[in-house]
Image (cartoon, rainbow, N blue to C red; front, side):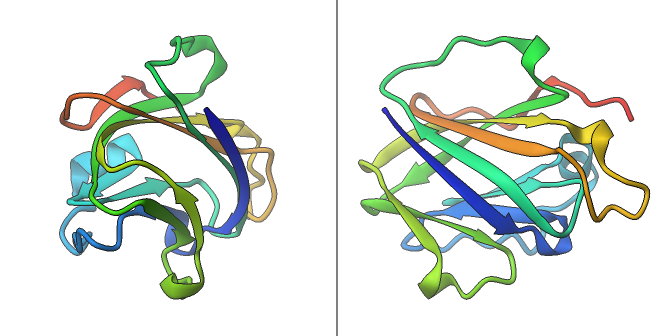
Length: 154
């Protein structure tokens, strides 16, 4: 297991994890369903929606097995899959310069991605401040379609 903490600029209310070698495009991924689940996917890339378009705290755990699930810890919780062909993933805001983005070493394979969203109701009316945070857990598992485990009700 490895844990990584970041502060990412969530320009356009999103940030990404991606395998650059897969080359998926999110151009058409942000549809009605993706907005509702706050998560868009394309081959080799996952876009996590945020409630602020400023710097947001993000943690990413790479795990050896499926983690326990506690819905009470989260305002919103979703899962999806990502195919990793490279030996690392990039973590970046959508307007960051990708060659300079942070990287996490990871073994190639198909991973489940669980994204927990917390503190969503703490965001100020001007959306500049808040105690929101985003936690991603990745482990190798069979591919699934994006799934909402708990829907945020604003």
